Image (cartoon, rainbow, N blue to C red; front, side):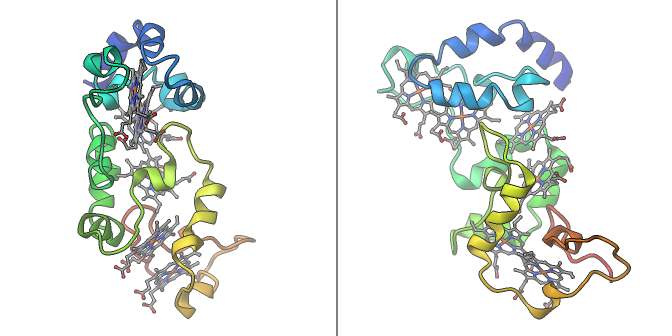
Length: 164
Ligand code: HEC
Ligand code: HEC
Ligand code: HEC
Ligand code: HEC
Ligand code: HEC
Ligand code: HEC
């Protein structure tokens, strides 16, 4: 299903992004380097809608779709269903929905227009997790990795601790 959609959209790719220039050149430049664009041929409208009124009103009218932090998982989950189903079980998602604390949604970790490198994402964990339990400083059982990272023990999307 997705692929039919992508094929259809591929042919409109350039034109569709030009619709958003020159007002959003920064987003266009970032997005132009993302796999979403280079490999999958996605365009702005897949997440924001065609936004005709927005364009023609010089940005006065809102775009068709803007995701609040707690709606981002739904937006990405249209295509990444498995990751979304795992993520919504996590405390990250619960905190985003309840707005009890600043928490991580899909774009906090992956970026939305520019794709974040995993090393950058990882440096961001410490921004919110200033202290972690002693268990997090141990070496994963049976692991030979030189540098232990959070994801050697925590599942990337549910955050569940792997059986040790
Ligand atoms: C004629 C100028 C213009 C064009 C063309 C334009 N926009 Fe915008 N857009 C704006 C302005 C002005 C704002 C508000 C200020 C800002 O966030 O940069 C805005 C804001 C936005 C926002 C953020 C809204 C929010 O509430 O945070 C999104 C998303 C967006 N535009 C998407 C698009 C998309 C997608 C296109 C192409 C289909 C597009 N725009 C075309 C002028 C434009
Ligand atoms: C994979 C989904 C996705 C695609 C594709 C996408 N965006 Fe966004 N965009 C988001 C998300 C998520 C946000 C942050 C929340 C929101 O505004 O929806 C955002 C925010 C924005 C904003 C607000 C300012 C900012 O940078 O955060 C603008 C402007 C914007 N997008 C324009 C564009 C344009 C132009 C394109 C195409 C070149 C594009 N977007 C493609 C998901 C996407
Ligand atoms: C319209 C469908 C669609 C939407 C919506 C979408 N994606 Fe994707 N995404 C794809 C496809 C297709 C690929 C695979 C590109 C490739 O490698 O061929 C991909 C690849 C990715 C990758 C790279 C995975 C890898 O193997 O390197 C990440 C990360 C990602 N998407 C995150 C997101 C996030 C975050 C959002 C929401 C802001 C989102 N996606 C929204 C279709 C989508
Ligand atoms: C707490 C950070 C975090 C959040 C939040 C997060 N991810 Fe991920 N995601 C990761 C990590 C880490 C990887 C593995 C990256 C690697 O190995 O390079 C990953 C991998 C992926 C991949 C590549 C496929 C795979 O499983 O290797 C996709 C697609 C993806 N995530 C989509 C999403 C979507 C959609 C959301 C929101 C519903 C989301 N992620 C939320 C950290 C996160
Ligand atoms: C923007 C802030 C923010 C970022 C960035 C962030 N987290 Fe979190 N994290 C939270 C919040 C808020 C909670 C929920 C705390 C609670 O409910 O007690 C949480 C909970 C967790 C938990 C506990 C899960 C559980 O079930 O007990 C783990 C593990 C975790 N985060 C790992 C990570 C990792 C790894 C990264 C980086 C890839 C990361 N976090 C990035 C805010 C963040
Ligand atoms: C060697 C394995 C391991 C590594 C590496 C690891 N953790 Fe943990 N983490 C655990 C275990 C086991 C628990 C549950 C222990 C407990 O509840 O005392 C846990 C619990 C947590 C919690 C929940 C704390 C609470 O009070 O509920 C957070 C948040 C967390 N880890 C974040 C991180 C972050 C961020 C990183 C990377 C900087 C990380 N962990 C690396 C094993 C690990």
